[in-house]
Image (tube, rainbow, N blue to C red):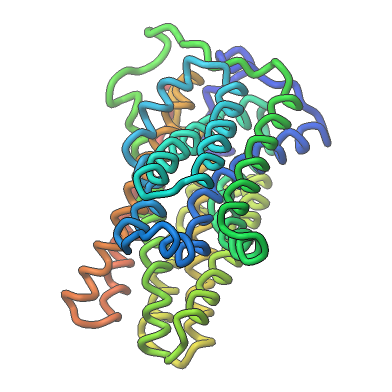
Amino acid sequence: MTEGKSPLQPDGGLTAISSGGSRYWSRFVLIYCCGILAATSLGKMAPISPTLSAELKLSLDEMALVTSSTTAVAALLGVPISHLIGRLNLRLALLGGCVLMGVAGFLGSRAGGYGFLLGTRMVESLGYVTVVVAAPVLIIAMGEGTRRTAALAIWGTFLPVGLAVGSFGGGVVSDAFGWRWWLVANAVVLALAGIAAVLVLGRAATGLPPEPAAARPGGLRRLGRPLLLAGGLATVSGTIVAIVSLLPTYLHDTQGLSIAAAGTITGAVSFIGVAGGFYGSWLLSRGVPARRVFLATLLMPVGAAIVFFDLDGVVVCMAGAVLIALANEFVIAAIFASIPDVVAAPSDIGLANGLLAQIGSIGALSGPPLLSLVVLGADGWWAIVPAALVVCALGTIVLRASLHRPLRG
């Protein structure tokens, strides 16, 4: 990274996992897979919702809560869980999160009613937050330099990849074997991935030793830049989730597509967007400043204009949606790669991850209803474009401000 000197020096309090060459990337891939499999929790219920609702007699509201509970808990508990994880052995926290999700997922496959199913999903969400907070810290612990920058940027793609895997895997496995076996298979693979990652990581990553109070700024000064980075993530995630949520309805209402076809197109667009994260990783590892990458946030309202100004049919709409998805992942790659540069001390890395998880989830939760109100209030889809422009312009300013000044004098 080029955004000022990172506080994470070899003697800075973060226990490094000695990794070189292919061993580094094999360890990263296992951590990344844990994140992907954890993120399947957000997408695995959608393809089985019709069957699940019918068998357990769930209302539409109940099914919606079962589906969204993971993000809701992240929005509530990201920071408290990050504080707890900062006091624990990191690799055991990763293992615990994966196993907790696995056990809860397996119990969910045995559910016979709404209450029990929702309870297992809430427990599963605790495991999810644990994984997504611990994993980036472990990646940072594997060393400095361009590999870390690239790895953190790639890590930022875990969510859309996990959503795609959950949606696709849920459809295929549940069609062949039923929804209960899909939940069992997902739970077993997730627990095994956590065990494999911990075994390969070894015993090096034990945690983040606390810094002396005098060695770091306190209060808002300590939290200011992580808060700005997390706030920027909230604007980006809120915009993409809102647009993706409304896109199927828009394609159905204005382009005459069936709901199934519109949903398939939206899923494909989201998955294509992952390429933006990998491209962002490549650029960042070659020294392109993250503050420059953050400017790509402004491409999202450009894509929204292409989609919602109804320029010329489905193909043009898809092109605009792809631009939004690519820009989103491009920026998120830079956000995660910037974590080491916005903390005042190594012991704050877990807190920064917790802020990203919590505030980013708040953005994702609030984006769809707020944008829906904008559309209804203006009585037209066109209103999405100025709304996206305002939010993304604010997000660009906030993200760039998070890296504006060096942490230490």
